[in-house]
Image (tube, helix red, strand yellow):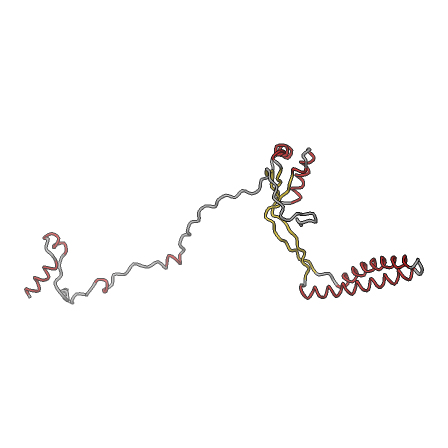
Length: 233
């Protein structure tokens, strides 16, 4: 539904007062307004405010050329009749029938030609008709504070619009099977991780194997024991 009429004032300030109700359509808001006016409220203190104004473009099929020609012939005939009456009045009423017939036929032919040519040009731009309009998502009824109590008692409890509740904090989703499979696996106990392998008879290839538990009990330094063993060799 169009919200901009011939008497609309662009840039006018919003009405100040108390919000009485919020309605999903303009007709529902008008029903509440009529109820308040019937209760004796002065309509000058009532206002309907559209919330979330949107531009709506409704699409329709283009009319056929026959329909365009018929509409043009009808408009041209009325225009020709009007011109014929003026000419007849100026000529003193002589040959009125011939004058009216000629002007009606001429007007119809001219209007048909202009209508069909205009339709051809419009179809080159758009293959469908577009009807623009302005509409609001919902409509508020705002009343002056002086009559707020009277309107509330006349209308009773009215919807005040949807209430927005804060959404819970988003938690990270649990990892799926594919993500779990991509986790790094623990390194396997290979020979490279254990260090240099021993000789076949069990002796270390370099140095002397030191038992850490024995070193801790005796309090000896493993590096010093290795130096002593090398000196003995």
